[in-house]
Image (cartoon, one colour):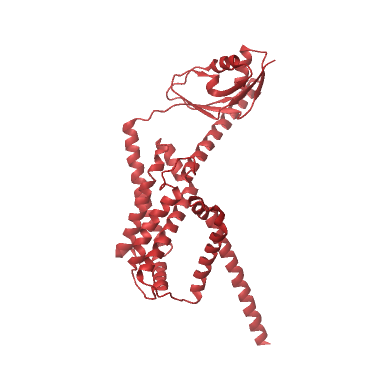
Length: 208
Length: 146
């Protein structure tokens, strides 16, 4: 009985209408390369329409699909138990432009106001006067020589934190924002998987 | 008797003050650490092995600020020195503000809802411009400063 290892992918984004084969959902490893190739090419699902929501494919569904064709394989699953499949969304260039402009304005004026709120909230003018007196020994009601470099420094700090200054390859050290986006995507995927598992259990309960 | 009571009172006050100091100092360092500000600075400059020095610097900074509350000493340096101090304060505040905003995780939500995806990371430049402009307006426009 030939052993086949299959490693389902975490997620898959397909072009709308493209048929989904087993090879797209999982990686296969077997002694027999010909067998590997046939398994990869085996169709699994018809293509998703453009606006279709995400679906979650259980690794057991993959096993069942293979069993229907071949009963003489020893299937071993390594890796995630679910694959989330989504149709690719092609953004409308006009809308993307409008959204970009809107987000840009939001981020710009939002940051502008937020830093003012912060200064007022923590009584930063008092601190600046104090620090100026500490350094120079003189009192100044508006120590601009401290405050203008401070303002530019605030921007530099944001850049430093998000690691946007260097033009290095993403492999070296990802920006916290990249990490945050990844965590967010992963959480959304976990939610989809657990929802489809719950729906599956409800289905089974109804059948009993 | 009353002298002993006064001494006991002073000892108690000192103990309360020391406890308060330990709590505030620990809270400050824990907060900065939770926001990963020193960690990011060490990672950015490839000086992960210097963390002992960075810890000492944070402790020394907090300690000197606390001492200044009691003994308002002054360094009597030229105003240009205040410019350097201001720039350092600004970079720190900028990192702190970014770390806070990032912990709340607004930007990934904006990226999802608008479908802009990784494009949003480039829009960080507008956050930077907004922060600088907002800060400059705050300091340069007299009615805003109390």
